Image (cartoon, rainbow, N blue to C red; front, side):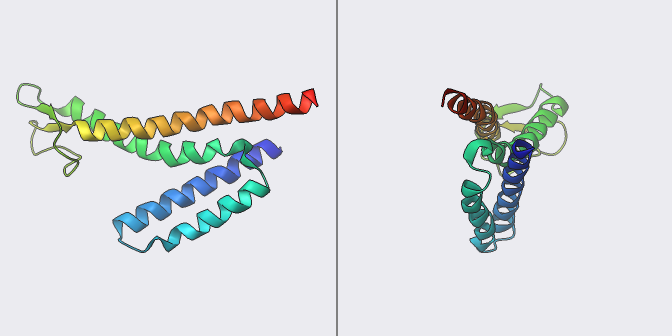
Length: 140
């Protein structure tokens, strides 16, 4: 039961941090919204511990990774490949151009891969840290 509470705790902190980042960047609000997740991270180091902190990375990277991947995949499926291209064009137009001819942004693909790497590192932490703690407890 303690393990699922720890995972849930760190996932909620990830959601709060993600919300704070989005609101601060998109609505151009000050970064004080990140003080609550920062305080909860400090508390989380004490109460559930860092054993399930990988859930924070899974949530923090997973949601943007899914959004970016779905946008790029949708763009690739709906593109007319006789006139479309793939290029480094910045991320100013993530949904492509008008009509079927578009430029699929390699920048978005790279950013999506970075977010997927963050997500997978969180999954790896969720797998490794509890096992390491369990092996220490059984050897002591």
